[in-house]
Amino acid sequence: MSDVARLAGVSIKTVSRVVNAESGVHPATAERVLSAIDQLGFRRNLSARNLRRGTGTGTLGLVLEDLANPFYSVLTRAVEEVARTHGKQVLTGSSDEDPARERELVLEFCARRVDGLIVVPAGHQHGYIAHEINAGTPVVFVDRPPGNLDADAVLIDNSGGTALAAQHLAEHGHREIAFLGDAPEIHTAAERLRGFREGCARAGVPFESDLVLMGPHTDESVAEALRTTLRRATALVTGNNRITIHALRALAGRPDRPALVGFDDFELADLLDPPITVVTHETSALGRSAAELLFSRLDGDRSPPRRIVVPTQLLARGSGEVAR
Image (cartoon, rainbow, N blue to C red; front, side):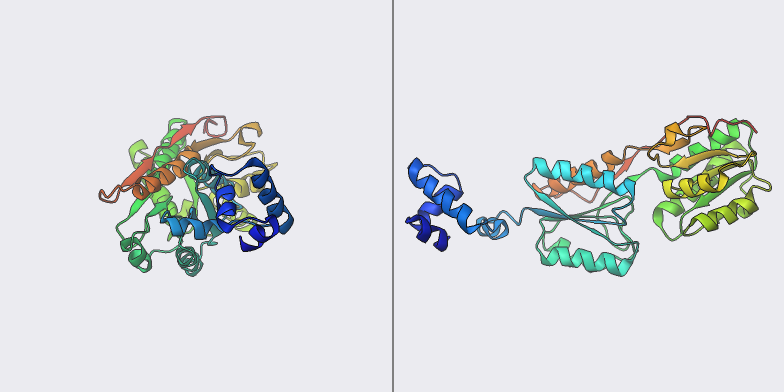
């Protein structure tokens, strides 16, 4: 500001008034100041300004599993839209499902004094952030609940969704239903397996553990799993959109394709042959609810930690309606 004032031939106070769009500056003087700003490439330090005013840094931290996953891209966009209406910017980082990386990102954002945090947890131990919460930094966990910490969480009805999938396939005559899920230590994967088991029980079909495969998946591992399970299974439930895509690659060109219901919708699923039946949910509602809950905490809401569950529904398109 001193450099701008010197170049424009005005006081630092005049520069401050122009930068902050305050009244009382002659238009010609303001033009000289703006010209000096352009010449010098001057940029305000917004963090310093906000801290001086006691209004925080104007930023939120968002820790995801993997921003490359379309699911998290939609969630991020929803958080950003809410943040924009509150005049905040969102800083984002991917944990890659690594608890150590999650902790590193969370503490880095806290060190940068973000006004609040939204976290998709990778691990099961979150006591490390209790001090920041107690010091006044609100934290909302999304998609999965935190471990050993009582905090706000916004979740999907994971078990209800896979229960719907199992019952739907049973209604079309299937009794041998396979399930491919993510690593069982992940909360969403464990809940979807539980829902699948419950859905089988409600539909009166057997839950057969040898038709269940849980763990990290690749094209090769899914293809091998299907070679094994489809010797008996006539139907398949996939635990997330990435596993669904791996399964579709493995089933391409196969004449005896099983009935298929996937958890999570994905781009072009409705254009395949047959179109893919999915358990769907409003991913944007997940991000929007988390962001709105965070801003309610920033606005002074001191009520006990809340748990919000976003509902799921089954979208029948064709692949899950193939009769046994």
